[in-house]
Image (tube, rainbow, N blue to C red):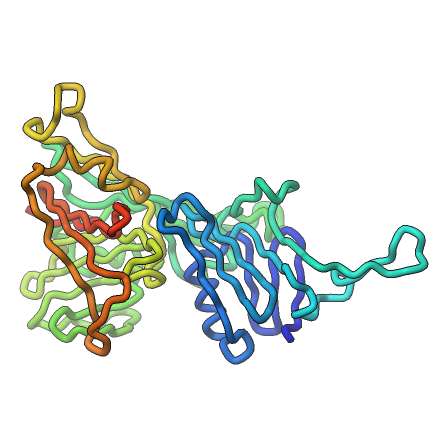
Length: 350
């Protein structure tokens, strides 16, 4: 039985861990993974239309349900739905009844921010969840005077200072950073910080470096920024950035729970030959929540066939989530899941 401390409107914690409202999904799952000796059974529930229903992590044997906002993928409600399976701090687990002759025992405890459970939202990104990393509030594209995409604009969230001396009043700092095609690894690191991992394409394995060493001269390599939800590919010969990959972290995708969701917004000019009429010949605004079937007719011809991508690893050739389809438009590739949600957006230099 778990020994738990309830912190109203903020968190639920054990002796060596704490689940905080506003915490990213990936961070919460990592905590549960590290506690697998005492938290033995975890079920993740999501919808085939993942933006319509909360993403729920159920600690089945412990009577605890973690409810995450389907868009920002941060914790909005902690529901201890069976208090007989956990030992709660005494001031929470029981209290005297009105006549003072008996004691009432709570059967359920919900931790959320606000006054109405039905309207509870994930609070501002908690400072205690940064752990020295930066996170992306939003990501857009940088363009030159001709309108061509030359890089990314990243609004970085970083540790902020307490405004009133209370942790609950702390807010992250937001700073805009711009990375461009042709930037060196050093220039990228100065803007975004050191990457979470370094991936050499030909070696097909991850390496963790801080700071990163000199890359392998024989293969292109990625800077993986997992907490920003993006990858940057460098050319093996020139050591210049040539491709950006933005990840949406939808459940049901092969890479789910590797990257934090990248909240991007990309304006895509529509080719007039694809538009039905003049009113349609405008920029399309595509973000992390856009469905491909809502924009496909403006970006591809009916006869265009996608490239089928079926991911697998060197240790497991099967992919339980099935193949995805990749569609190219100008210098952008959209990877689309079977439910029409966009899994990744790849932008490459021309």
